[in-house]
Length: 375
View (cartoon, helix red, strand yellow):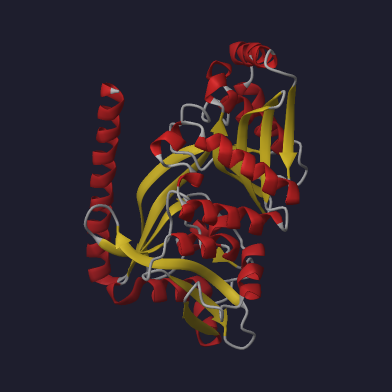
């Protein structure tokens, strides 16, 4: 690693408007392609359509670049928001549609690049948060090495994922052994009563048509009735179509499908970034609910991932405890909100932010439990 003090004069801090036509998309995409830990949600192909659909004047793209070569070293969208209910804090920008806050970090970067990023992002309050950060990611390990900054995992959760190789095969076999394998085969036979079973794994141009099928399927289900399907309003429909189109150009999206005859039973949208796969959206035909089409497509997608020689690991992006995905994707992705602070004032604010996060999590957990009890 390069000594941070030697790097400081080589680095330049940029605060960019992600929408600006002057943003060098080639440098941005190059950083995304070479990032130490991939994040499909901080790429220009996702972030720009997302911010057009959900505009926020507070969000700026924080970039640390080499002053001489103009090579981007580290970047992430950063804005100011409440940690929980009350305490405002600068944070990498995440959302329900993008639950991953890992900054894009060039794989040749050193601690000086990260130090410059944290100093710029934390501002005068000397405080910054990185939510939905994988705890065992290489970026997280490097951030915790930064001298002068105190790091505190204020909130840690665990969501479903799966590995590759022998470990992934073991996870698959454990999930599909015994009664579950027998039951899922029985359900597939029942589904076959509605037409011949076939699966598809769509890339490139085919993924565009497959996504239109996905939108129609999602709109027919409970999300359509609740008004939360991607096609339920013009903003999310346009945003999601642009994202899929952008990612399809370089096979960065895969649409997995399960068909019964001419009827789409289930569909899963996955983002492929580097050697990792991120499960973004799932929909299934509720007329086939007794055949567990959602679980079937999750198992089919896992099998497809494991057959790819370039595959390393998968993140379900699902809420912890998800009843459908967790019994099948047996690996764990530990994530958390990492709060970085500097000095006495920053440390005090970090403690307040951590308490605020804990309070919000407790209240929301109790609210979900009450809802489940009375539903």
